[in-house]
Length: 429
Image 1 (cartoon, rainbow, N blue to C red):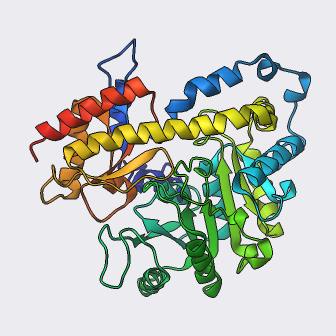
Image 2: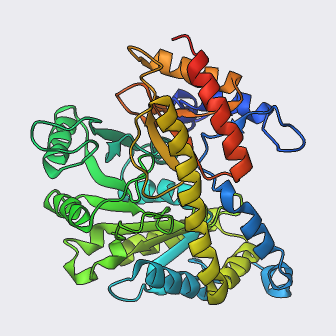
Image 3: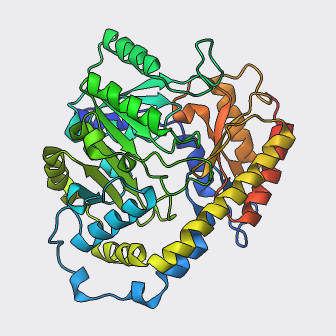
């Protein structure tokens, strides 16, 4: 679509940008699955929505205390970075959940309506138009859109191999030499690189970086004067007990190579399954970045009713003691159900340790996979009543992989696995 000069060049980015899942979303949205009202609809295994916990969260929101409105929720917010009580509740929660090296400081955070707008704002603050951000690929598919639409910032993929490499790299391992190579190549191609974005736990792989890896990436950024933005939105969805939390908050701030260029993001969308009532947090040690965030927060305010409700949820320590282990047990069970189906199909996958999804290799059913045949397989899955997200939606250069969501109610997931098996066995690639 072209505007014929009706809109600004900035707005033209919206139409020139390729969004790989657009066609898949349209079909799914017109025929969504419902266990009672539309049993033949399409089950959504492509959007990272934590539907497994919807009953727990709905029950909590329906408590009388959370439903109570009062006059303090009606005026304009007085605090541009989020209500002080909410910031303290989030700070206390993150300090506890990450076993932070020192208490998370509520005065160093800015709260907006989700991590998506925060990524947009961070790109606007840290980069100039046409600057570039490095990020490992496969990458969360929203990053290129989030930093391009308004800020006009590009992304440059650091491609990770699905195979073990002769230099000793494990499958999907990101090393500093790999980062150095990507940075040098980007510079040779004319890119002005300003930052590295990491998602930890890693979407779409469902893995978690080690603390040693995180420190090496921070040192790389410091060496090249790059900002490091770490999206920890799945931070409370690590369900493998053998995996240690590697949040930035686990480091003593004085041990960070460059804390003024290190920024942490978190939100309620994934760990608490409430993307429709978004609350996102940007945490930074840089007072100038914080002031810029708070200068833009008016455009991305969280409604005071939601701020109040989330505050009460995070202050309810007894409820959290029950919810968080239950949430992680649900993820273990749903991941195991999906792994069993993939094993039966002979589909390899990256062992999930966190998040709501599994990164699986469907090349057994897509011989000589290309971007087109990968998308054809995804469309075939929709014809069989499920929607999956093909690897190209994550800007990956090895076609045939897909991210599939397992965080669903058990009965829905079991039905989805039946449909996945039927789709695989009937696909004529």
